[in-house]
View: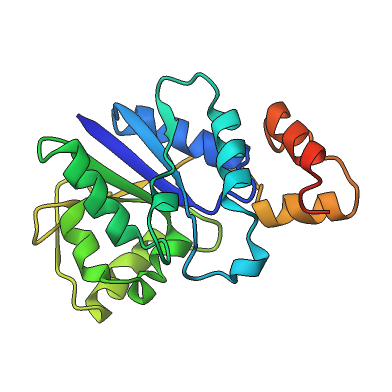
Length: 213
C-alpha cells in the first residue's frame, strides 16, 4: 500500500492544496493521501495561527466524502511542537513496514529542511516527493543536498533520485494555482469575496465563525 503524507498549517485549506493532493494520488498511484494539519507549527508564531480545531474542521469539510483524501488529527494528540519526523515515525509504526510512505512537500519548504528536527532521519523514514513552487527549481536540489552532505544517486528517470537508505527523491509537477492561505486571509480582512478559492463549505465555516476578520 502506498500512502501520501501532506502536512501544513492549512489556515485555511484551499483549492490549491486539494488539487495538488488529488494529482499526487494519480501521479504516484497512491492508495490515499493523508492531510495532516500541524497542531503547533514549530516555524510559525503560535499567536498567528488559528486554533487547531478550526483548521481541522475546515480540512475535513474540504475533503468531504473523498475516498482518496483523508484528514488526520494525530499531531493534536501529541504534546509540544508538531515535528514531521515524529509524525512519520508514528505513521510508520501504525501502518506497518509493508506500507510505503511518500512525504509530499513544496520546493520552498524543502529548501528549509536543514532547520527541521532530525532532518537526516526524514530520508530514511519515507520517500520525498517535491512539488514545484513558483520561484524554486528542481535543479537546485542536488547542490543543496551536497551542502547538507546527503548523498543521492541518479536513476534513468531524471525526476527521480535514490538516497543511500533506498528511499526515493521524486520531482513532480502539479497544476499551478496562484492561491495562498495568506492571500485568502488578507481578502477576508478587506471584506472581499473568497468564493472559488476555497470549497463552499469552508467559506461558510469561515464566515460563520468570524475567522480572519
